[in-house]
Image 1 (cartoon, rainbow, N blue to C red):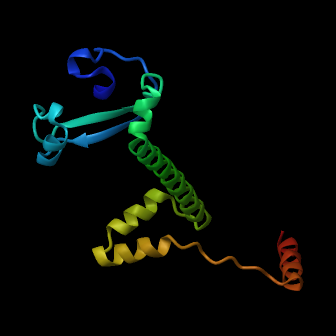
Image 2: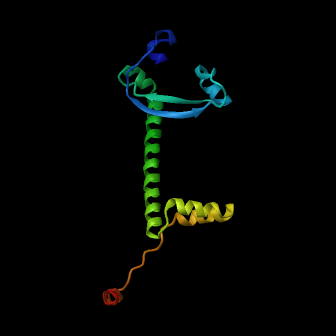
Image 3: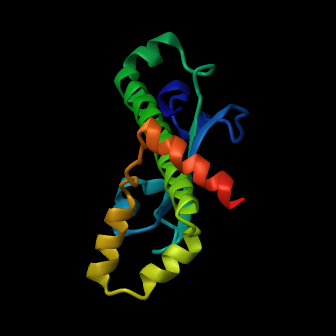
Length: 152
């Protein structure tokens, strides 16, 4: 915006543009140095950085000038989205495994809290791996089904 408008005095006080992302951050000495316009915020204060789609405002010349930065940010957003999807899928798989074994996520977490830190870490690592699937030979499957029918 500064490059497009030529300085803070010419940047409009309001813009209506699509929002890419809101990124939470906490004020520290390093964020004060990096974001000088936010240096007045107290240490420890939470603030949000808004990444906007400025494609409509920027000239082709400015887009070319900032192409590498725009591409880096787009790639980061894509990686973040892929990671979130991967984590969501992994959590759904774990929850499915927990239900299969008769434990809710809460029950498993409460059980883990009662363990030592080392044992809890080992247990969490083990829970990441799916239980092996058991396949019966067809003849054993048939025998099992017959036994189940007789018991009913």
